[in-house]
Image (cartoon, rainbow, N blue to C red; front, top):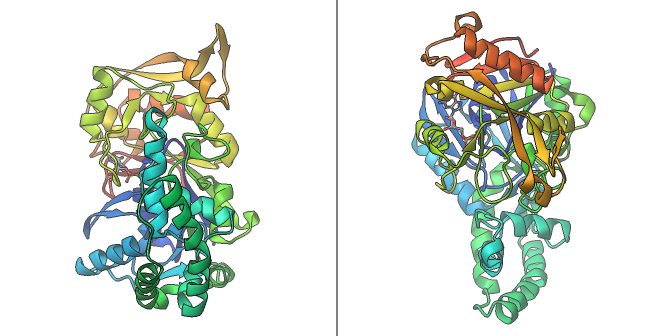
Length: 427
Ligand code: GDP
């Protein structure tokens, strides 16, 4: 059995959680591989509606082993709370494991995230202020503390003493705020360590064993390709790679193991936070999509910016991920619209371009060139068979396939598992 990677293809919030929850019914392992609790998946299934921030969306399928991979940064307080909340609602978390190589979000990361955002004033990046960016920065600077360090109190104290000294200098001398107490942070993280110890493992061995048994493994992406630190709208990006390449590194498996790469696209575009979004609609159509789709962030509650499907960005995303297929979510949101637009190119400084520029300054100047398609103005959320979709909806899907050169496997017409049209088999 293969590995299927489920990757956000736009700016995040595409509905990856629903897709993973759906596919997990046939899987044995689901690995979350990037981001932190700044990501949020909403999953609606027979157990109810859940908002997950760190725990993989496969947790609802009783045969699935869920792994939080080394590529994720973990705030232990948030993870423990998420485990408790799932348990209270009858969801078993005994099959959850955490990589001993995952870095931890520490109290100074959260403090510094807020202080750094405030110091940027009008140029704030729009981070979720959960300490994720500073935690990834420390990982690369070799100043991180990892889940494995929680298992040895001496190692934890040694690392913390070394690192906290430097952080306290920044907190007091640069930002003029109170220092953090070594003893308090240490004893708090010792408690977290005791609670999380049963979950912490060398998870790459578990993955290899599953693959050797030919079991289906899912890689669960967080955020989206256009937020990648290399390829996204830098610096308005996230701090770890949401691309399939990030999946290999963040889960601990080789690229040759991955046989299907699914790009999850909304049928339109949204973006939360700052940064360019060429097809953003600042008019009543944008408001209509936001209200109809309830486009407010799972983690922050912030209103999402809404706009038309951007095929230039989608082609770019397909190229840098090598998608073998696409999932189009939220087709039902477009049911009400009489006409639809798809961005097929950009106009930049009087010239037509069909690539996604690397610079934010250029992207800000890009004017979308639209193609118009007829809407279908009929409900689709009850439809399960591709042929039953209104002809205009099929035309819309076919045009997205053409423009992105990516065949569509699944179409979602509602948040529930069964509100899915299986257009073409994934495997
Ligand atoms: P993720 O982080 O990519 O999983 O996305 P979010 O959870 O932030 O946002 C996706 C939202 O869309 C969730 O509330 C899902 O329940 C919902 N959703 C997923 N697919 C569909 C769909 O086809 N139609 C509708 N109406 N909602 C959907």
